[in-house]
Length: 99
Image (tube, rainbow, N blue to C red; front, top):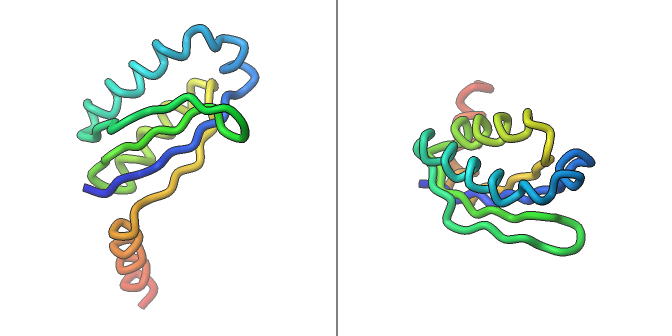
């Protein structure tokens, strides 16, 4: 299963309700499990990003569904990086679609 690194920034709403972030993390973990993904670890950070999550997910579609669902709540904006093997599969699909 590909591994994804998700970098998160709290929105104004998210930082205003930062006391709820442990509950939001638990909801994130539960959502991942329901969709067949697994949170390997999550970190609170200081600086450019507020949170970092390392997630194993079956594919890009699943990971995007998780992030869109969490993002729609308005508490966090994310940037996500995939592992090289996921990139290879994605580019292979893109190449075949272009021909």
